[in-house]
Amino acid sequence: MSLRQTRELLRLTDATLREICCRRFTSEELYSEALGKVLGGKGRRGPRNIFVIFEDSERRVYTGRVYQLREGEMVEMSDEIAIDYASIYAIHIPEAELVLSNWGDTCETVEAYQGNFDPRVKDFVQVPIKNFVCTRIGGERPGAMIAINYPGEATDYDAEVLRSLAVVIGSLVTLSNEVRETEKAFIYTIEALARACEAAEEETGHHILRVNRYAGALAANMGLGDEFVATIAYSAQMHDVGKIKIPAAILLKEGALTPQEEAAIRMHPVYGEQILGDSPRLQVAREVAIAHHENWDGSGYPYGLKGEGIPLAGRIVKVADVYDALRSRRSYKPPMSHSEVLRVFREGDERVNPRAHFDSRLLETFFRTERMFEKIYESLAGESG
Ligand SMILES: [Fe+2]
Ligand SMILES: [Fe+2]
Picture 1 (cartoon, helix red, strand yellow):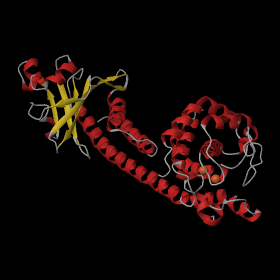
Picture 2 (cartoon, rainbow, N blue to C red):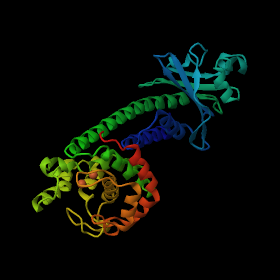
Picture 3 (cartoon, protein in one colour):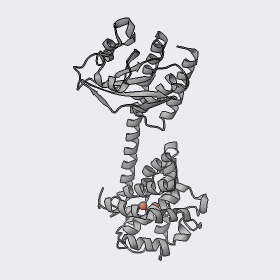
Picture 4 (tube, protein in one colour):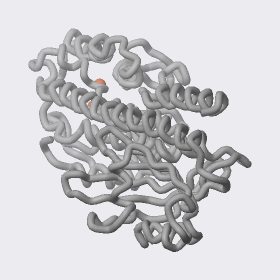
């Protein structure tokens, strides 16, 4: 393996490992990136086709896909090919540690050599298979990677590159799956915490799930990045976690609150921020918790933040939370219809002053996406979650 290729491989591994923290790769994306970058640089020698076979040992079946390297990018050339366990050669390849072959070494004619491959592979490759290198892939979903048809002869050195890639990719796929599992556990824990905290309030139903969805829809329609959209769509539900520290007698009290009780409730954003701590993963959740009762004109609580000084995530969740609160039945008020809420968001009422409370860009996005809000409310209108 050349120094250049080794360096490229190391750089790629490093970049991929760093990226893996925020991206959830599928194995195909990994193959595509790794093979495309290492084997397929523009104008460099490399295989014309890459055939990646996966082995499902339980079902004793193989599936594969053919790719072509085009200017460093792996382009899918086939749908998934199911390879019959009984078919020849292609299914024997995964059992080999490393195969390096030029047809002339093993067969008299191209046809004889190509006859060793599964017909569906040949159909996609379309030109005679002259030579190939193949290596096993370890990890949770074992298989084989075969690079077919080098412009020149396949060499030991090509086989070495492919083998290194298989090692790296096998472990990255495993790592990526583990990251995904951890991510699932993280989201589950967040939901459990949000649920535990909303239990003290009556009739909230699927409120937290709906607020997640509205917040995600607003963020996406404001053109915010995918990562922020995904993050706010699970962080929004944390807006009221601080209420767990407010006595249920106050939260559930019917009728007017005393000034002391009102002051106690107004502490919930601060408690929420404290509960969420300082984990970087919970930064958006923390911004949501602390800022979802702040008003654009500075008249909100707990800090009276103003305009752009209010974290964006808080401004987004405020719109989502107020919409849902108006739509829902509460002990002190009946539910409103979607069109009644539209009127309040336009003209205001005794509690909501849209121009003073909301970011005007968000209000405009709300009116653009209001049908989505209505759909989300209707699809998750259940009384309990
Ligand atoms: Fe709140
Ligand atoms: Fe809420």
